[in-house]
Length: 112
Image 1 (cartoon, rainbow, N blue to C red):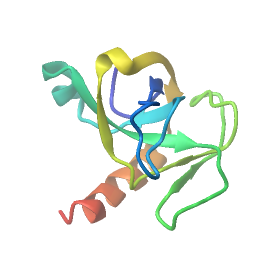
Image 2: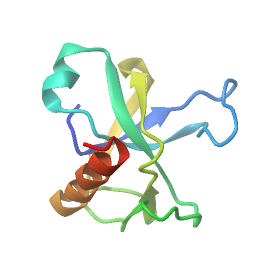
Image 3: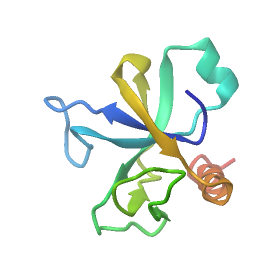
Image 4: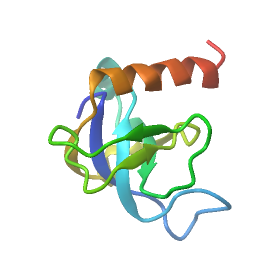
């Protein structure tokens, strides 16, 4: 598992509240590779094919590298961490430019 990879992740179904995501869905790994090696918890951003785009969400067009079934949105404001046991399998990876946009958003999100 590495930063920039897209994984199918099992989100918490029976305990979601409000606008929290549920069911198995793709998610982008945003945690550093060094941190991934030191913990069983990994930080991600969920992805969706929903057309409800928040102003900061990042559009990812399906391609051979990311191996998504459909064009998707990275829901950047939904930063969450899960145990590695929730990660079902790797789907693909996002392009460098898209990851740079995610990192730029994280600076805004955390006021860094």
